[in-house]
View (tube, rainbow, N blue to C red):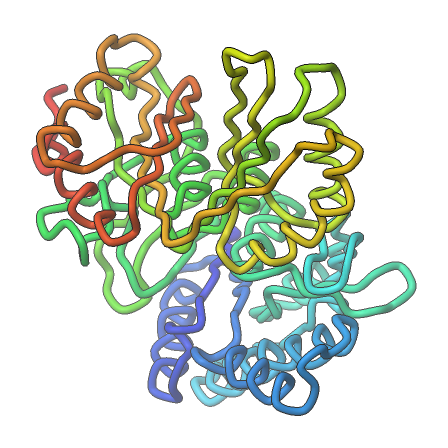
Length: 409
């Protein structure tokens, strides 16, 4: 008997027919002699509708109340899935994040899982029940509801699988795996049979929307092997696991894009210790996530610090930085640019293959696509380009590395 944790996203439970399909899938897994815990998101579109109503009533709705409101979407789903299973003769029971023992810390709407005490889930499993757990949520030690941010149901599923020492965690969604690029943009993108934690993490943090990056970090930390597959068919998915030597033969695993990026540059800063700390510290205090960071020194000895973020955070970033400018220099200024996108190539094979960056930049240059900021890591190269050119850029790089072809063993 295997213990299987499954996660169903909003599109998988978006209608009553989809919920019936989910219930039938769970029953098939149960009938094969397995124990099942299903982590479920809100029905597709529900979270957005709840946010719309909140904003209509109060444009600055308190985040505490938003957590109470948004968590209700998942509670609808788990009850409906449990009811659908019961109609099939399956003994199923629903549990909110708090009831499932998911304890959180941090800020409202951005909670972080601190620990899971899964005694209730284990008790139900011992009784032969299927347990349907609300994703995206937990409770603080004081009993306050926390939501985990967009994509938080992925994190809930991985964390539940880790706490139960599950045999496998399946992330079931409306796509049937991880592709070399978004197949809606690159029509000949190829589904990957497997990918390493590090590659999946880089692709998730670079714009691939299949998985939330925090959930991949959690899986790697606790060694949770998981599969990304479709809830709408039985096709094999993509297995995400520890890297092995054969993976290094593939130089580039995939291409990711992330739209709606903005760049902020602070100029005329003295090249003295502590300046970067002041800049990034105030952004951290404002809970603004910074992505690409580039610093350089001009010929007159003054420094420039540039960094990117989501366009939605640009206004808050500018407001947070203004009081700090006078501490940096009387001449310090803020420049900003929106309508950018980030293009990333990812692959652990970069470690042992030279010339990856040159090949990428040459392909983009030949296509007339200008590059802005550049950052690299051991297994990733990222550049900013105009948002209007991001799809062309993805196709050009995908073709340059022949990612549509199955790599030779």
